[in-house]
Length: 107
Length: 107
Length: 107
Length: 107
Image (cartoon, rainbow over all chains, first blue to last red; front, side, top):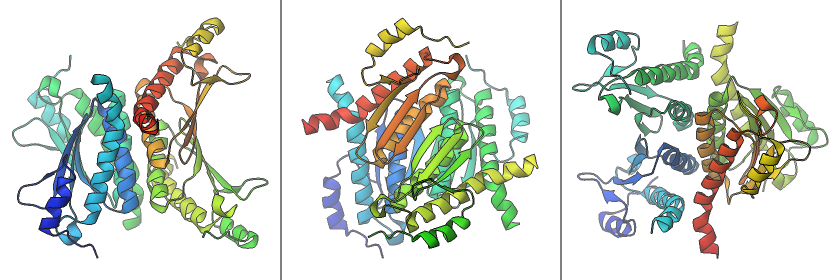
């Protein structure tokens, strides 16, 4: 059984995921990532797809060219669960890995 | 330059793409495909991604587990263009290839 | 710990996987699949990649355009294990799903 | 028609692609890349697959978990062509983008 993270603990967890926003009127969290092009966006999405399948927890996501909007929630518990946090952290780490080099070059 | 398909020709074209619906108040067309699971949905999306990159025309699409919602439009001409039709046909052919066998088994 | 399938049981298992051949001087098994083009081959490989990551058992594979050569073995037990059989069956089912329709059309 | 790069020009080109080696007795070039895991290797391969399909020039490649061996050659001209160089440069840029951050952290 998947346990929902209580509201107060959820706020704490989100404070450690600054790139994510809680959706209004829902426990789901969302992050928007803008890549330079489709090639990069799809490479990113593929890595997330592999991890989602591995941990059996899948995102709701929208893609338009270089833009990816990811929404995470856990239907079994009607809210956020530990699995959402695990996937959010994996997404953050992958974005970081793919973009840090570029940020350095732009700096 | 990308030419917009005129309204009357568009209706004719859509009559040959029965799985697609015109969006209200827009020239965009949309198809929803339901696969059995994420593995199949992602395999499908990957084939469409390759073709989109090859013809340099990308969908707006949403995925939740086995469900894929694809919206096609051409921003350069603010409407439907030949490229949307080409991609829609490729999507239809790929869905057909992936699901016909199963439909036969279910029949 | 991963258990190696004994030689006699292995022969029995392989009799149920007719598309696979045992490699000379090794317990590894190999299947060669020929698709019509790279789009189809890559769509296939992506579905296998998701399953490989999910069950944490990865193939050794070679791709040239529409051709994919998959070799399966389990390094931990220095031979074939149950995991190889699971992945081989998944590969066979996916190939079947992608090609049956076409075979029917060619028939 | 695809033109073969003459032997002397080829040597010059390869001097600018230090990660690639010419195969013995052949004009093909090869690069081996080692990623930390399959997730990263497959994310890389997917980006190369998109580009290969876009420029209609495909690699011969082998993957085992985090290792990818890429061989490039142009069958139409029985040697190296400009397309191999374009794909080799794209591969080098993608590897650089995915690994520079990590190298900095390991330094």
